[in-house]
Image 1 (cartoon, one colour):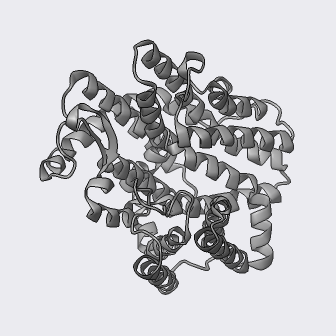
Image 2: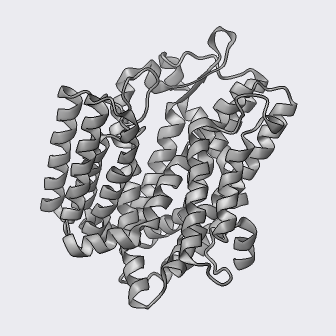
Image 3: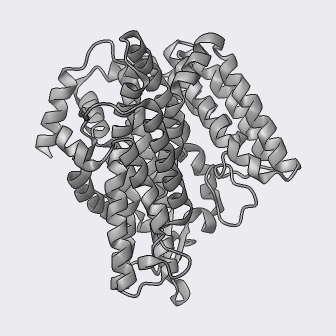
Length: 437
């Protein structure tokens, strides 16, 4: 651990004065919130002799209010907008092609997930040969691969950065409000006209809108106490109004049994929550940037950011392996998730999850090292490969790895093949990354 801290300290010492350290801090903070939120809400239960892969939101409705804090996907897209705007503008000014810029982004985003999927192929085969029920394999893998939905959506947003940034430069905040209007129309059609299929378009409207806020942050439209408070107040008023007087549920993540989900696909409350988070966090940017000028907090931020994709992608796999071990040992899963005793043992479970995650980070964190590949492929081929990969990632997040019927090896092999095929088209593989690093 001391070696990792020393390397992070060396990187931190070389940070240019022009870098906005708060961007990196928010990225790290978001990862921490995601990991903690997922680990806390996970509530596998063996009551009645059967395993139930549930969560605390089902058993204790009051916990749904906590999702207003722990649902931090908007912060990811906000930070992504800031970072992508800076990098794309810099690349354009240096005369770099779209393909060069995109290749670097895809190597950081797609490379680490391939190792995760390869491990789950082996786990799936092993569980199948061991006689584990296909439904349980599907449920466990779906739970572990939840992070891939975000990755799929985020990569699609990255693909269109040249277009969204051009829209920002030309239209400013109107490029944000136009997407808000589109999201409103989409929700109206979804909720009142029964056009549920169109609801999926809000993955683009809402998350690209939040990404536009990242551009706005970079250009000073949202930063500062007064501006931040105004954005937060607007978002809070809209969020409370939609939940209290509209058809939307309280929870900002999907809860089994709810007729409507605010996140699958995303709805207007998610956009309102993005305004709240954006306003509150950017209202304190000044003092936070001064705090991050100190060596210790900035080194910690650098350390986390150096392995951030690994932590994000593997934290639920680590938890799933712990749950699997508990099932084999028949221990620890019999406490009713609706009881106070369940909360009493949460710290222990969090500690065990963290211990299980540590070797995953140490083993696969090196795949995040940035490094140049060979000669860049055409931009259209990179984008096409990314689309194919994202289709596979989205399907895995929705259904896991197990086949519904008696598929080859009991796995959805064609779905599992999509991310690898897309990565090959884009020239992104863990092996290539390892050689580059």
